[in-house]
Image (cartoon, rainbow, N blue to C red; front, side, top):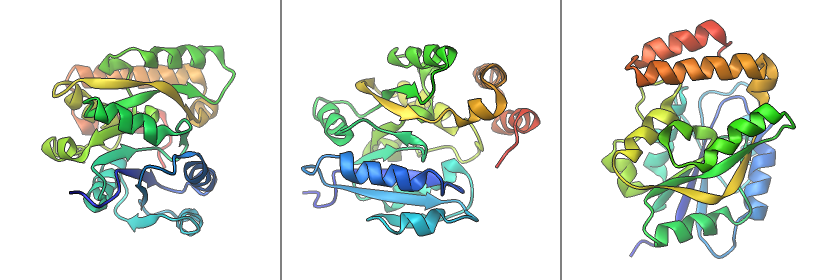
Length: 234
């Protein structure tokens, strides 16, 4: 019998001192007290106070080379939960998110995500977020968070570390080919900071081009080159 936590929450970070404290406070005060869980921070070389802030909370803080795919895979290696829950540092899950995930798991779901809302009043972005209710892989992204059983994660060999960007979408497409993907009936709230920084039209257009390039078979390095050309990369 598995005596470890039921859910391992894995959060990749890189210079997230502005966001990480708020997220960890939310997780520790809005999760259920009846489900055992662990929080794993995997930092990719922050030069700010991300790790120092995180260590003020009951978390396992790990370090590895930069790259979200690498960081999330590294966190999964140390996770002891039977369910892995991947969460971005600027995304807040709904209250009792752990109960919702566990209930889906008990009903047979091996992977899934929440619907999403942007923290913005921009009606265009609200429209984009509205489509996250539909169960098509094209509507998926890492900002919606992702739960997956550890057994299935290992079977699929985790995230493809060749991807510097688009690693979430690529992995989720593989999940769709393997099992029924569950859209949970609640919403995460995620930051619109990239849209605010570069403008919603430019950001959505170039993200759309990256989606199309990937669907047409462009390799990871070409997607990254396109991203670098149109966005500053941290």
